[in-house]
Length: 467
Image 1 (tube, one colour):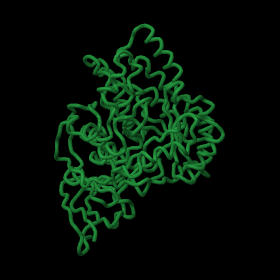
Image 2: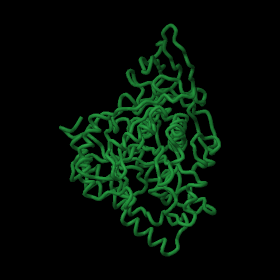
Image 3: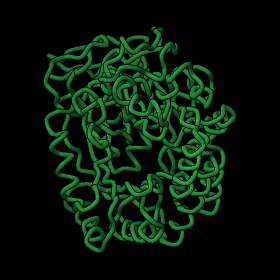
Image 4: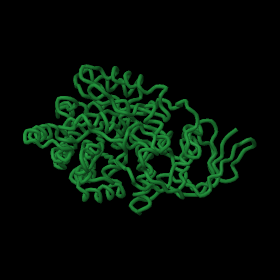
């Protein structure tokens, strides 16, 4: 017995067309017309769009931050994700100083296994570099299905690595079939500017963006691209925010370098003025890199439309305003950096991208699902609608309209940066590997059924590259 979705408009990164879709078990088994088999359940989805399940390749669930952790763990974060139309997340497992990569990976499996409403995989963040770590990179690619690693050029004395470690990691990744993801900000300069601001008594949230100006992101982006070129390795820039960094990526692509980049809804829709919100409210928007002046947004939207930015992720890293963000009441540098967004990503991009004409429906699917699947070793199992692919499907009803409020969301955090934003359309039904996990926009069942995804090695475009 299968399930037939009848009457939808199928949208992939390449095509838009009318077809019924038949699911059997965990897979899509047929597409077309008159495909119903005896005993099949038919779900009428006339007037709706059918998208591949969203893939958010940048989340931080249950991330420790000193004496506390992010407010969303894998249970609450993944519940919010699936209700928003995301069926796969890639979270950043982290190797803290003194740990092996395997220890970091085991720690994150303990956090996530059996507690995820969506399918999940891990990038591995490296904060402590040595010869053993280099060998472990190869072992994680070959044995654990971890084919991407993250390094930070920011957070001096905590997460930041030096250029020598970056170059070595890029070389190792190029040899073992991995993709290196990099947080691009000049951590040394940021550290100096923060200390300078504090010494001058500049402690309000508004000084956060002034101590992390666009120039420190653009410089770091240019620098890591140069290192990737030296290493002859592919590179993925996370949460790109500004025109200078985008220019560096575009120039690298024109040189034929294999450089990819993501941005996030907060950088497309929010701007630096939010830091001037009444009282301490600006703390809600303390993220790194920070929100930029509004003129950067037009260039980011253009970068998405032209394909120079491949992915829209969230960097979902939620801290409660009460009790967590408030730790920085007297010092902006002590405000935990991060904001929620995993539940609202697809709705915001559809509303302010597709409905405004900035993006086509096919570009929307590429940016929210297909490109991430291809870059991170999940395609064609994930990221498309085709026979043989996992039946990860979102029935999107474009006829609905709603207002985003913290009360209506399912993220385990006491605010949303998009409070009051209008959303057009919503995920009416969501299927995860053929399971009808969201019905009429309501979660079905209480048991998480997401599984760990062992990902394929990164496929380099260059002749003779890794597979």
